[in-house]
Image 1 (cartoon, rainbow, N blue to C red):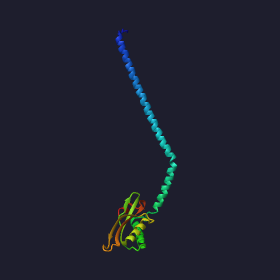
Image 2: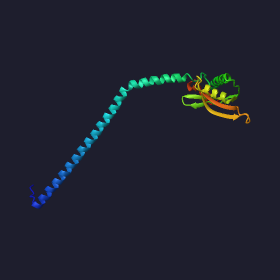
Image 3: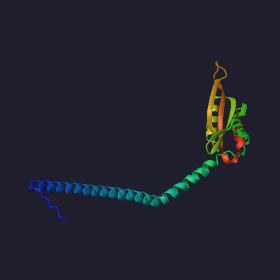
Image 4: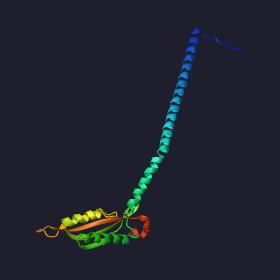
Length: 196
């Protein structure tokens, strides 16, 4: 089946031009596709290189990390020596009260009031606050505060109220201190953290 095609020179030029345009469009799409593949490959290789560098640096820093961990562990052991030894908050509160009485008596201060407050959840540790009240001179109060701060136990003063006992002669002040010590939570039972 031969069908003679009569294509004029003008139509041949039009078809040839269309073919060139289709060819150029194909070349453009192939070049764009090739460029995109190169860019994505380069980005993938760069990402992998950065990841490998980070992993390599972590491996090389392992020794430093282990040394730091050892130092922190020693510091934690040292700090935990300052924790209260009681296994329940009331026992720990009694320990704080005993220590505060001992500090106060060393400066000739008589504690007039004392009471254990409800324990406070401090994350890994349980805070055991105790409130005491006493009358002392400014110098004795300063000495007592310093002694509490330098105590072998980890004690913090969370609240302090000072009231002059004699306005005409303001030598002595009545002080109410709330002192908090800490104990490991694992030493307590669930019910002990709720009551005081």
